[in-house]
Length: 487
Image (cartoon, rainbow, N blue to C red):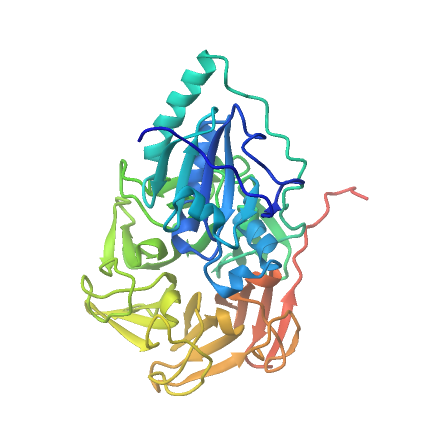
């Protein structure tokens, strides 16, 4: 495209991660990438790894997020700092409520990226897939050209803003949980801290896996890096924990006793490359000789051969919809949870507020009606309503559901067809007590461990425990034993 002068950033925008509004004058001599997106846009969030990769490869690049709300909840200013923290965004973010920047830069859809050279000219735009592959070579050429001319500002941009830091505490937006029943261990995906926490049933933290810094590095436990890890599946026979590293679009393998993290599927980017390019894997389950993957970004269920590590689509056409039928013709909507009864697969199809079953080559909907039909209704499965459930787990003939949007834990009996609330009043919170009075805050994943249900309560940054016999909910206090002699 022919370079054109970039319009200035209009005054009156609300800014985060900076102590002052920014203008093109502030950015003179710098390569700038404007990232037009919204924190409610799934496609936008799936490109986070590519944005991070661009920043790592081109340290002189200045990224400015332009958050353009499209849904009512996202337009509430008080929600934006929390969304920034949750997404791990460290660069300045401008909130474009009136879409003035959209109009000035001719943006038509999320996500769109506008590249501005050090002279303030627009030299490239990109939308949709393959962001890194399209922009990285161009940024490299601009860096070389303006560097040779002495026109490139390489000193870090001083914004003076306090970047929203991750919450101090044992967990930060944990997402999924798995159990080692023989070894009496719990594995928790500490998503916001980019690590895996290993704990005992008493809450004692046995160890953490991953450096805690967002990245994509294999190696020993303390050196390896994850990026927004989510789903977990533990192979007790092999002593291997599989991790859906959602932000890196990979599946990672954590093995004992060599204590090493390795990538077994995925390229690390959504763009084509060597091996199968995964797209936001969010949950995992082992069945037979395969690892099944809830591939949210692709609106599919994939499977990986445990022997060869070859990954391929298994169910779903890739179209975002709620359609039953043969494996290749059915359609999902952002599937985020998966479990098995040893024969069939059950999928929490989050975008459709549905629970789906895959059996004998067919996909069928047990709970759910459409992408826009959700609610909170306990009754026979065909009439029941859920609200964007993110997790499912099978135990002794029953499917338990983390009904995330309703802040409840529900039980589905495939034999009788009934759906019933087992814990949670429906209010958002972190109150313990009798199961009907207790409150949850966006529960994500759950596992039955020793007869108790351990539930990752994502919004409250905790693990909750539901006792189905005593009908009581409590909070698991995570703690780390002090070193001998420590005061």
